[in-house]
Image (cartoon, rainbow, N blue to C red; front, side):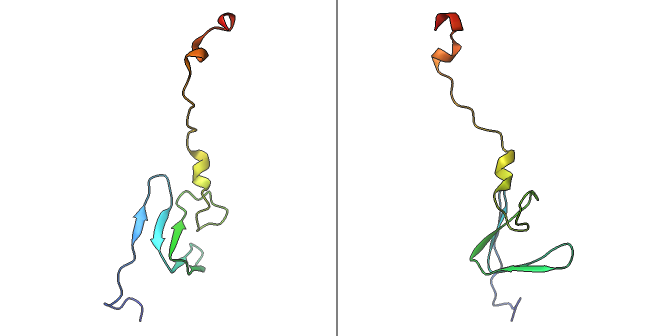
Length: 83
């Protein structure tokens, strides 16, 4: 029976700038009242709403992160005349 005292609580992990990681299987009720289900052992729920597979995360949140800068070499500091 769902929600019986013998059921262990679901674990949800919160990640900064990322999805909610939920131990599955899960059923998610959307704003319009429809329900979607996943039988996977863990699911990633989108929190940025950029996912094309909403409510499931498709890693679209990664597109908004600042790009890592490549370390500059000493040669990059030279003027064009010195090269």
